[in-house]
Length: 189
Image 1 (cartoon, rainbow, N blue to C red):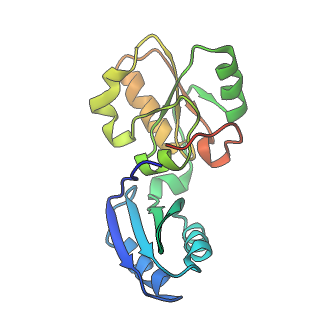
Image 2: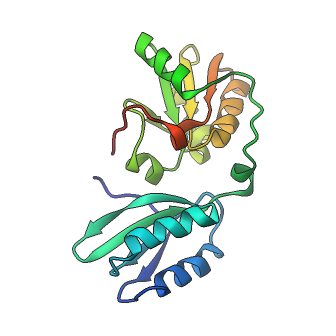
């Protein structure tokens, strides 16, 4: 797996339960929504603890890697908008409909999650363009392609679909619920 990008890091090496969680909770208050926190820990118990804590607080546990004795956990801070679960873009498909479209070919899938989220698992062939980079990178897409925009829950992809439509892209569809419930094939970067 290639190097995973994070926005902030926290050193919790040498600490035992519950200190890595306490430090993580405190650090999350200092970072912006949508940013990825890397927590480096040596306590094997953090494998279960970090995931459980993130899910119980609404943050997204992306996964972990091992570097010798160090566990590198990646957690994405959730935003208030994501928690609401509201979408407004009119062209929507569900995950099963996307699979059907993929089977018929000629689809462009744009994954607008952060690069760390993409690295831990994405739809095969999906192009990674994080939402924050979409304005600068939209020209990497063809205005005539059938574009299916995916994120974790359908909220960031809703915003991305709106942006692309406003830029003149004609065949844009938001995929809901997205990767949070995707049961098709997955690749890791």
